[in-house]
Image (cartoon, rainbow, N blue to C red; front, side, top):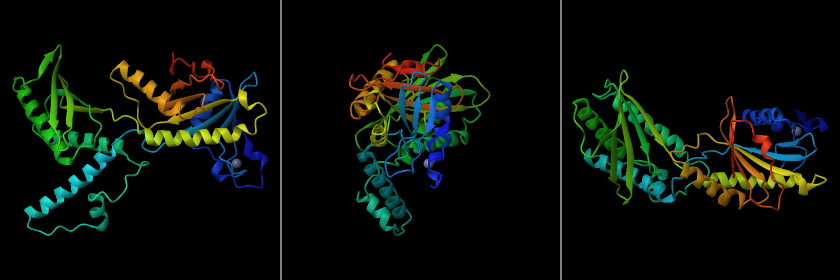
Length: 344
Ligand SMILES: [Zn+2]
């Protein structure tokens, strides 16, 4: 790999060092036949992008790599406010039960009153969901069904964060019905299809919305194994903010190119979690969302490529712009037998 930093020996290039995910991307593009150059980020006050790449025909690609914080999870502002207030009410109830005085910090009070703004950057709802899944696993493992030879798959169909009591209530429902199944009975409203027993948990929340879970039970195995799948959706605020920055960085490099109108502009985004799909229609929706929220909003980009599995074989989901005003990314770059490209 070439490195622009060697042209500026007098500068400190600490900030130009490749991060692991940037190295993965650079290695990938080299394996695809591009000559990759690391651009120096400290040579000027410009917003320099990560890589300038050239193919054997002399076509230039400018590439920016992003790894947004909390790219998944679109907990709404209402959910944030609701959760904070619900937590506060719970503390109040507990204090009341113990006839104790409620002691809270100024921050906790402000949070409950909705006076602390909801950060767009670090929502971490994906981490919260992982925590919730672990709690369900822990509580069932501590219950009487722990040694039942069944495999349970739970699919979450809502995008809001559960309260602790909602999670407990659901887990109790699950345990009760697994006990019934263990006794050879069919829980009310559940159905058998082929080798699976399917249940549907629906519960109205205080805010009027419904918690909805599909539960799938398969008999067999040594003891209870439990998997929770959830599809939180994308945190579009984080994705858009990163795309906006990337476009700015790519544009600033175009001024240094002799034929900027021919330069291909590529954004690569690393995501912490797989884009999980149950249905093909969800891929269609994702494609529409990416067109609307990235490619149309940031029309200088030729394509955006998402990577959720930075392991071998590395693969990408690549979305090409439909705009005829900027050079399109040649499809052969990601034609590696593992990546998916849209439109097809
Ligand atoms: Zn440098």
